[in-house]
Length: 333
Image 1 (spheres, helix red, strand yellow):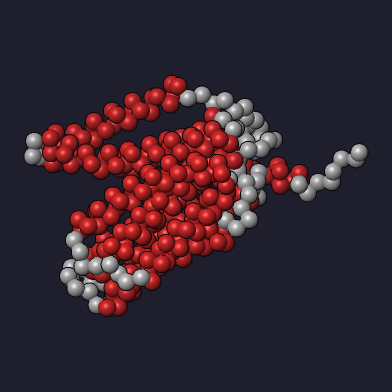
Image 2: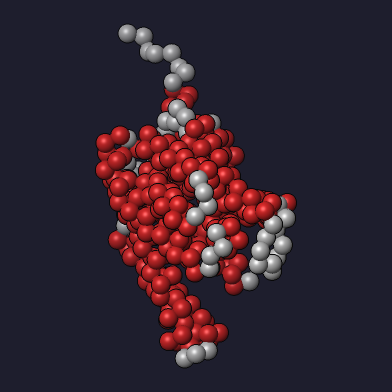
């Protein structure tokens, strides 16, 4: 029950936090800076938590990890509460929105005809699905295909996080030079291409390390421009840019992403079972190793290439009002 309540609270905060990108400013560059700061901070926070959790648990629990984890979560809750107070106190919604009198059904219909939002949400769903395959099968691939230790899998995950951080730093100048939409599509295609090349190369730790580093760099480049484009998709009028509609757009987008994690985990379990993976056995069959390697690299590569090559092709942010106005006849001169 406590974990379910935590997930609900996280969903509420995450939706409002994402919608702030649309409501703080309409300026393209400012939104890109906000999204970049968000992703850099999230990556640094994840690294900090992963590094400090176990030492803090041991220190607080004096050897009793059960008590240490309980005390550590109390500390984390207090810190998070203080951090959430900062934006509530100092961040202000500067974008004037027209909430209108639209029903929820009308707002959902407006989102569904929003081609930019629809394509971007579809691409995020595919990439989240691919990432679930990649990170879910990483330990299995290192253990049974590369025949290395689980510590190596941990180092590889840390390497990806560091390269995501580096990619976030590169996203701003790249988007300033080539535009957010081309950087988003190019980064997604590059991430899929890196994984596909890694799958075709011999299975070695060195090859995998370089490939995952490049993959993390591409993902880091895509993350800020993705959230910037998502904010641009909601610019409009006649109630389509109201606070409720913006929040609904972010909530549905976040829901689709979370569903991708659930579906991806189930599909990965099916792939591993179909390949003949035997739990608790140190040496797997050749067929099982091939299935693990395909689920780890090939399937994520295809999903990323599908997202960048098909879903994001001809992508352009568009809101429902613009879609309607573009079909109207010009006024007489």
